[in-house]
Amino acid sequence: MSVINSDKIAQMLARFSALEAEMASGMDGDAYVQLAKEYKELEPVVKTSREMIAALEEQTSLNEMLAAGEDDELVEMARTDLKELGPRIEELENQLKVQLLPKDAADDRNVILEVRAGTGGDEAALFAGDLFRMYQRYAAIKGWKVEIMSENEAGVGGYKEITANIAGTGAYALLKFESGVHRVQRVPETEAQGRIHTSAATVAVLPEAEEVDVEIEDKDLRIDVFRASGPGGQSVNTTDSAVRITHLPTGLIVIQQDEKSQHKNRAKALKVLRARLFEAERQRLDDERSAERRGQVGSGDRSERIRTYNYPQGRVSDHRINLTLYKLDQIIQGEALDELIEALITEHQAALLSASQEGAA
Image (cartoon, rainbow, N blue to C red; front, side, top):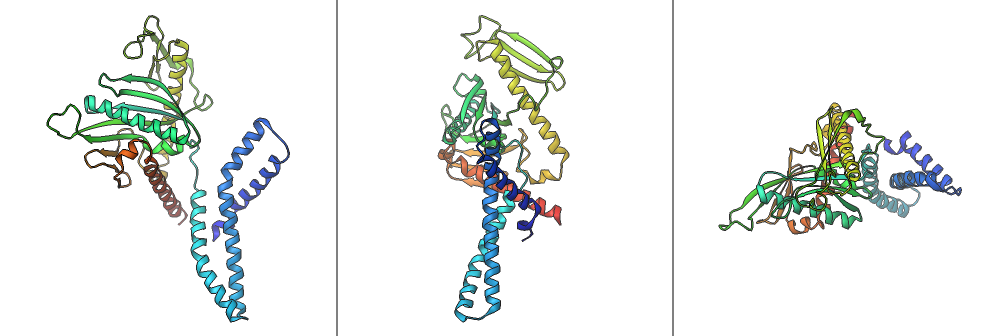
């Protein structure tokens, strides 16, 4: 039971009490918002800690009753209560261990979502559209806001690529394991002989970065302007409103042409560039901490095949955790996507717990 007696728990309980007192003192404005955010983050672990403390105190009391042995009826009652209390204490301890795991600092951030058609031609573009709409519906269920930043539509419908900003509580925490190659197996509408085709789309989920996270110097940028073209560009292609930003040190290129204003396109392109640079630095640090990478579900590498959507069988298989759900329609509608995401988070937490126990051994 060392977890409950740790200095970390004691410090959290003391900090939580201090926050309650400060928030009750009548402060407002930004200071109150910051305190309320910290309070909300601590609340679950404090609740579990207090339940754990109460359960351990009850266990001590019942053991003392057994040791006294003065009343047979009370002794029997204590034995029964102890038998029921044991699993509850174990459950609370496991819950507390998970809550105390190091938190990804980016979990509370908004998301830059990029979906690109991969191998498979027109069918891949249609599948990219299906995936984007799946995330769009999932975001609506969560009460998140989705803003399309750029899109390159395919002639058959769907997208060659589409980028969107998803804003809402816990967006990155829930979507971060979606990065990678998604594969679809289905019979295209244009397939006369009913043969199943396999195609793919690539998803990248990037935590939105603030200016303070990534410093971009003007000398490191080459900015080209040109006339927008293609679907969505007809209304703006009479002026040089489209923007191409090249980050010279890394070679990263971001093109933005959906807005009529060159200024707005530049701002959106910088937002995407900043997110990509921020994620690249996070990935570099993760690579350096090789031991911690054992606690990850997949690498987040866009080249890694993570999931297959098989339409003839109505199933979705996540290859990282060997989970198959026969709920393809509900998942594509965003309704059952949580089942996959929660399983990935659970696996991730279990791997982190295992790694932390190995480190403590």
